Amino acid sequence: MTYVTCPILRYHPVVVAQKAATMQILSGGRFRLGLGSGESLNEHVVGRDWPSVGIRHEMLSEALDIIGGIFDADGSYNYHGKHFNVDPAVLWDRPETRVPIGIAVSNRASCRMAGKKGDVMVAVEPRQDLVQMFEEFGGSGKPRVGQIALSYDPDRDRAVERAHDQFRWFGLGWKVNADLPGPSSFEAATSFVTPEQVGEQLPCGPNVEEHVEKIKPFLDAGFDEIALVQIGADHQKPFFEWAEKELLPALREL
Image (cartoon, rainbow, N blue to C red):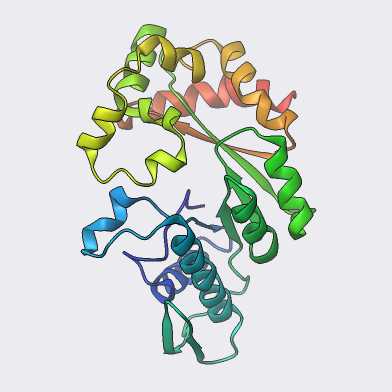
């Protein structure tokens, strides 16, 4: 599953739909398409003004209609909206199973969109109200995925240092993160965040109990799936080995 793709500026929703269909075929029907309204950091590179959050949600809503329409169309698909036009689009290689669409949520408006137009909810905060709003708007019975970053390392101090170096921006929240245009902005916005603060918020190190304690709030809030994001490109293999032997069995016991 993608966590999450933005289909409003860099990638036209038609292209996202076609890529997702291809991934569904190549993966044997195991793919999920996660979508969100994006961040300036990634989207401004195409040279267009970064829209306000209201416009971004309008664009995402249209993109969802287009992607779903292409998935469901029997032949070619046309669309003419406020922000996008499709004239016409065809999935020449159609997967046997429709690609499930996940939508990132953080407030009532995004929960409404996810409940009405999505198949999966994705959130990075263990908030029960997000689950309740998602269900209120049609998400009852659909998967609810909580995404959390962690930093595994046999040495906890190294794990905290790496999390601080690469992921200290997480505490700013999406209202801030979505509008920062470049790495220097993230550096400035997080200049006063300390390693100790990061270590208090994110699971770090080899202690399984610490990781379980900080992941459990998602389960308590009503999430039924957890997406674990290991921080550090050079530390994936030892993380997978540790998670298989220690972390996942402990989480399944919950």
